[in-house]
Structures are given as C-alpha cells and as structure tokens.
Length: 110
Image (tube, rainbow, N blue to C red; front, side, top):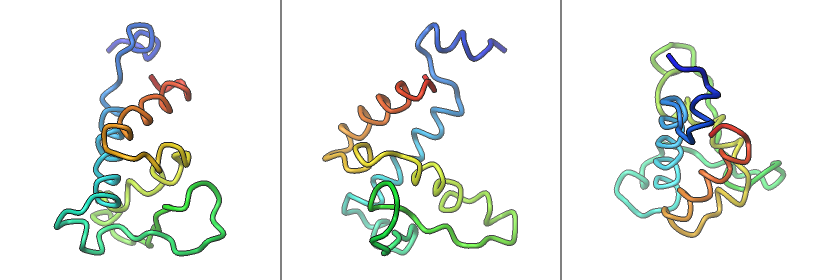
C-alpha cells in the first residue's frame, strides 16, 4: 500500500476520503433537495441559534448498540458538523462538490 504522501503528490484521494465525500454529498441532498427521502426524519438539524460554525448542525443521538453506532445517520454527524459555513451553504450540488474539494485541499486531506 502506498504511503499517504504518494496520494497527495499525485493529486489522488484515498478511499476513506472518497467515502467521506460521498457521505457528505448525500447529507447535503437530504437537507437541501426536495426528494422523498428528505421528508422523513432521517437527519435532525439542531434548532438552537447559539451553535458555533454553521446553522445546519446535526444532532447526534445516543447509540448504545453497535448497529446504531455505525449506521449512516450516526457516522456522518461529526464530519458534517466540522464543515465550514461556506461549504454547507452552497447553492447547488455541483457547487457543494467544488467547495468540499477546496476545503479538503485546504486542510491538506487531498
């Protein structure tokens, strides 16, 4: 397996980062697009106006069992809440993809 600096040197992303990016795209679609799945209470936005960061922070419920701990709605919360506001408030899915790639590049993850 090549070291992480080889991925950065070639401009490639790791499988882990591609999975995170895909998860973040799906969360964006759930929150901002009107589709049948977004109407259910799959992800809950925190209603508190005194949150740090962006205004679309997600609530992470307590999970006792492993099956819940590793589910989609539980594992994406920390990563989504760590995104900056300029990424979360993108105007379209395409803009979100561009902005999240810029953010990952700026953080040194790509």
